[in-house]
Image 1 (cartoon, rainbow, N blue to C red):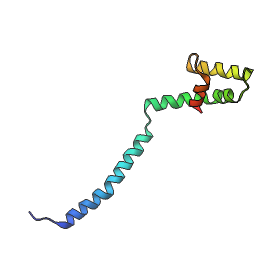
Image 2 (cartoon, rainbow, N blue to C red; image 1 turned 30 degrees about the vertical axis):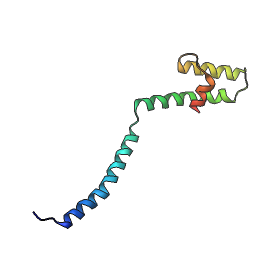
Image 3 (cartoon, rainbow, N blue to C red; image 1 turned 90 degrees about the vertical axis):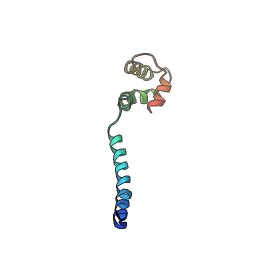
Image 4 (cartoon, rainbow, N blue to C red; image 1 turned 180 degrees about the vertical axis):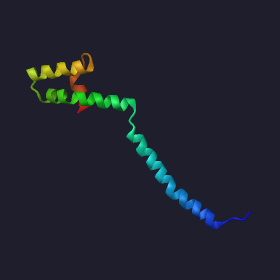
Length: 90
């Protein structure tokens, strides 16, 4: 069995070009299919964005602040720390 340098070079080139393309394609495909926790987090953040903006820009003890707090509580399903929740969302 003789060692053919041409075949070795060709195999090396295919590996050098193909491996990075394969790895980058795998990374892109993994990023296109979000996991359940990413989907849930995104849904929560999107539904809380508007009430959190109203809460953060409203005056203390104002009607707007109370309504925003109530809406945030309704979305989350109970009493929450509004300031920290909105920091997480925004």
